[in-house]
Structure formats: structure tokens, C-alpha cells
Length: 255
Image (cartoon, rainbow, N blue to C red; front, side, top):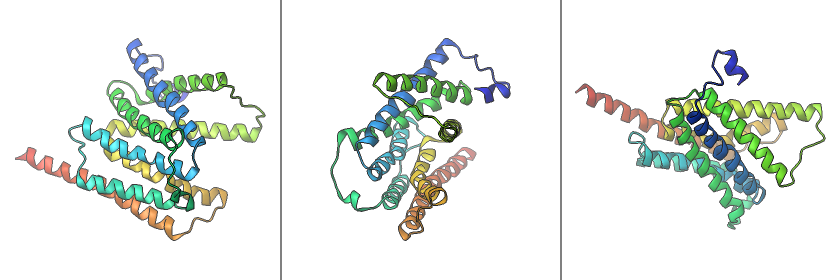
């Protein structure tokens, strides 16, 4: 909000109707989504949680198919999405994957959270038609974050023993989170949902790369390179479809 104010955006310009819509976005996308997500993560392994969370891209592509006429699911998009998901499985592959157990409060909750995030992305795209992206992001995170904090405190959660190091890390997480949410909403405003959603397959790939840079973990393995190739090729296939359709549409209009 301070950044918005610095750029001349009136941060208190929302009507009651707009405020209600943004509040709904914040409650579901932040409070409900993260509550369900972290319950799921705490009841499954990191590997399975990462793979299940990758279904966000699938949900985005499928939901866009049923909501937008110009964002239909085609064989090329389906194959590209499957390749991206296979890449996520490969980058997370270890012996734990061979355990086919399924816990509703674990893997199930992570999948539910992925669906909520995708559905709210479409709702956020609708709001960007009439409201500023910065305000949507700011109010959504503020309202949802406050409610999530109060919910955590009501259920016995607490955060103490803050140091300069931990406080700096918390500030970094807050800035990176708000920045990424802003960019996500901004991308949804100007692009098709299916075209953007498929990039979620890159999250675990970047996670692996960052683990190597900042944590010194060994990631120069064949499986990680193969995963990057599959995810990149899957993203290319999904976006190549859109480019071809755009050209076909332009030719039809010119005729």
C-alpha cells in the first residue's frame, strides 16, 4: 500500500462493493487456502506435498477450459501439462514416492488448496477488469493475513523469540510473497489463465536450484536436468498452442 501511495494510487478509493469483493478474495485465497494447505503439508511428506501442489497448474488449465471460450483445453495443451507434471515428479523422485498411501488430511488437503488457489486466480482476474492490481493484492493479503493470524492465535499458535536475523528473514518472506502475488495477479490481468498457470510447474525446479545456491545441496543430477527439460518443453507446448490459435484467428478476421 505504501508503494501504491508513492505512485499516486488512491489506496482508500475502493467502493463498499469493491471492498467486499477484495475481502472475499483475501479470506478465501489467503486465510482458507493457506490454512488448508499447511494442514495438508504437516500431514504428508515434503516430496508428496510438492507433487500434489503441482496440480495447481492442472486446475488452472482445466478451469479456464470451462470458463473462457478462448482458452480451451486441446490435445497439445493436455500433453504439455502432463509433461510438466512428469517433470515435477522426476525432480522430487525418491523412495517415498513408491509409497502409494493417500491421506485425506495430508495429500488430499494439499490438492484442495491447489484447487482453491486456481479458482481464486480466476476470480482475481475478474476483479482486475475494474480494480487496480496493487489494491487487489494489498487488501487481499492484508485482510486474509490478519484473519489467518487471528485464527492461528485462537487455536493456540504463537510466535516468539524474535531476533534480528529471524525478523529480517520474515520481512524478506513478506516482501517476496507480496511481490509474487502482485506479479501473479498482473499476469492474469493481461494473459490467459491456462497460459500462465502452466508456469507453476517451474516452482519445484526453481526450489531445487535455489537449494543448491543458498543451502549448498547437491542438485547437479541427471534427473533434475531431465525435469527442467520436460517442464520447459511442456510450457512451450501450451504456449505454442495459443500462438497458433491467435494467428488462425487473425487470418479469419482479415478474411
